[in-house]
Image 1 (cartoon, each protein chain N blue to C red):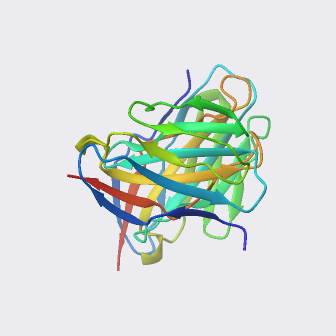
Image 2: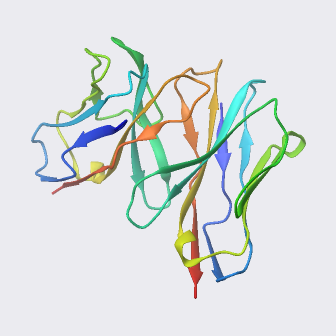
Amino acid sequence: EAQVTQNPRYLITVTGKKLTVTCSQNMNHEYMSWYRQDPGLGLRQIYYSMNVEVTDKGDVPEGYKVSRKEKRNFPLILESPSPNQTSLYFCASSSGTAHGYTFGSGTRLTVV
Amino acid sequence: AQKVTQAQTEISVVEKEDVTLDCVYETRDTTYYLFWYKQPPSGELVFLIRRNSFDEQNEISGRYSWNFQKSTSSFNFTITASQVVDSAVYFCALRTTTDSWGKFQFGAGTQVVVTP
C-alpha cells in the first residue's frame, strides 16, 4: 500500500530533550515536507526537500532540523524542544511540483 | 510571495443544505496548482481535487463541485445536499512551480459542521 509512515503517533517530552520524528514513504517520491498544524493557523510548512541532500526552509523552520540522506526517509529533529513546539505534525511526500502531497497520519507532540 | 485566504472560520448547516467554501489565493506565478483537502475528525488529510492554472473549467464529482475563477483569484468549493459525514475541516492549498519549487501553501481552513 502506498503510504507515508511517521512515528511515533503520540509523544510527550520535556523541554530541552532532543527528539526525532521519523518519516518514511514507499512511493519513490522526490519531494518530502514537514508541516505543523495549530488551531486557527492551519498547516504551516516547516521544511521541504526536493531530493536527497536538497532541503529548504518553509515558513516556520526555527527550532527544527531535517536531513534527507535517503530518498525514502525525511526525519524531523528537535534539538531542544520548547513548549511552543507542542503541535500536531504531518509528514508528506509528492511526486512533483504539479502534484499534491500525500500525508502521513500525524504525530501529536506535547512538550512540557 | 504566495498566500491562501479562507475567510470563513466555521460554517454550520443542517443536513441537505448546500454549503460553499471560499478560497482566495495570491501568487505572481503564471503556472500554479490549487488543491482542496479534507480533514475529518479522525485527523488524516484527504486529497479532494487538484486544478492547474490553465484549466478554468468547473468540476463536479458527486456532491462536490469546484469553481475556479482566475479573474478573481478564487477557487471555491461547494458541497451539495450536505451530509453529516461531510463534517470536517477543509483546506485550500496553492503550489507554484517557479517561485519556490517545494512550497505548498495552505489556507487556515474552514470547519464545516453538518447537523442532522
